[in-house]
Length: 162
Image (cartoon, rainbow, N blue to C red):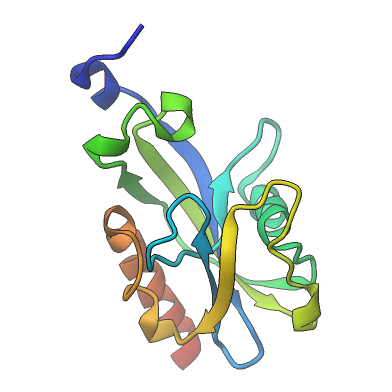
């Protein structure tokens, strides 16, 4: 059965996490998604599995998307961020079960060598990756995540100047 627009807007939010991965030079890891190869870059993020807490989900998602295990937690960002899918994606993303995502974000330090980073995982999500300056986070993000990235960018800036 196809859901109506009203039904789609009544869908719940997906609980998720996001990871700001900083290298030793305080550059942030971003990657380009396979399913949206335009010039949009994002940080690792994903859903919370049953039985996981937010931090466990962040560690798992980071590993699943980047193969990175060598990290230390710098800061759990206070509160949650929320974004809503645009109408064109409602009913498509996440098998049509959610209208957006409520996320807990973590700032982590990458402790490994770059050779540890491998986006060619079991279920690859990214085409390519790079390190960027913290003040560039919002420059190439998909439009419906811009407010989330603005908040995260502000939190990272606060950390970097403290």
